[in-house]
Amino acid sequence: MSGLLTYSLAFRGEATEDSDGIVLRASAPSWVHETRLENGRVAVRFDFDQGSEEALLEAHLTFKANGYFSAVATIDFGHGHRLYVETDDDGRVNGSADEHLRHGSAVLYVVGGTGQFDGATGQVTCNFVLSDTGDLTDNQLGMVFLGKEAVTRPA
Image (cartoon, rainbow, N blue to C red; front, side, top):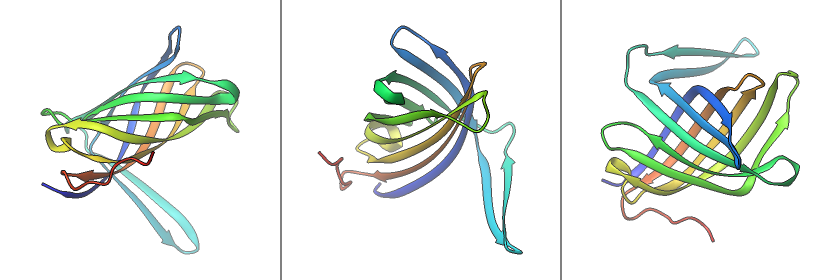
C-alpha cells in the first residue's frame, strides 16, 4: 500500500518531569474537527467519538538552551500500527498569555513504523500546551507517506 495519509488528532494526557526532561503520555479518540469561514468569522466545531478506539502517545522531551528541545515519540494507533517520530533540537516551549500554561510546537519526522506504517516517512506537526499542574493538550497534524516509494527525511 502506498500513498499519502493525512491525520489530525487531539491528544489529552499528562506531562511528568524526569531527570532528563519531560515525559508525555496521552490518548486521542476519533474526532471530527470542522473549521468554517462564515459571516466574516472563523467558526470551529469539535465532535469527539466517545467509545471509539484511541491512539496513544508516549514522548520524551529533552530540553536544551532557551526553551528548545529534542523529542522522540511513539504514536500507537492500535492493532500493531505505530509511528516512530523524532525532532532535532528545534522544538520550542515558551510561556503563553495564560500564566498557568506553557505553549510549545515542533515538527517531528517519521523515522519508522509498524503495520500500516511499515516503510513510512513524513512529518507530524505538534502544537501543544502544558499546564502548571501537568495537564497536556497536544494537537497533531500528520502527513505520512505510506509504502516503499516514500520520500526520505532531508539530511
